Length: 111
Length: 113
Image (cartoon, rainbow over all chains, first blue to last red):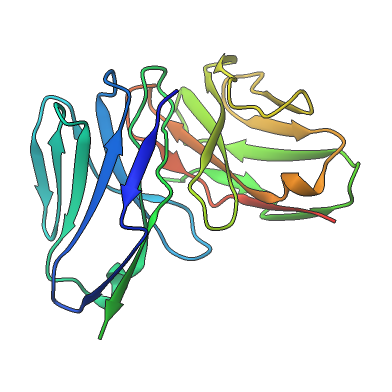
């Protein structure tokens, strides 16, 4: 079945610096690549997504880049703020429409 | 508009009991998904519905777990003979169709004592 790996498991950055989280997947049929943010005790919330016909997508301080050949996609957050602290999950969609979730990255923003 | 809702928000039950968890999707969303999230882990797929039918139930861990969506809207996840290992947050999500974004409910925290 689909294998999804996410790195790093924990990322600590100074407020104002950038953060990058990488996700690799194994299913070559995957065609939809979302990133979710989950705060403690809350539901996962979609923050950005990309489809396989696009290489990069940006939404204000957040961007996602996709390399389908290498089967990885990354989340980029610039000018990090305290409210960016959360756990971030990649969840590429497999060929049978289910999301396959990574183990999560805990992002810590240091003041 | 209203988002995905789930009831109850918390459920504590004794080992061996039967529980039902309910999900109300966003109105008009034809696809509905159930996931299970254990502490410190990502959600794990259980089952998804397209309309009234279960399109993929490959994630259900065993035959104690069953889900229905009789009218293509509300769904109920049913767990028989609960075990302590079933303790987790059960998340429901819905999407306009299979190929569009999934929106999550707040989850039901199930604790089996």
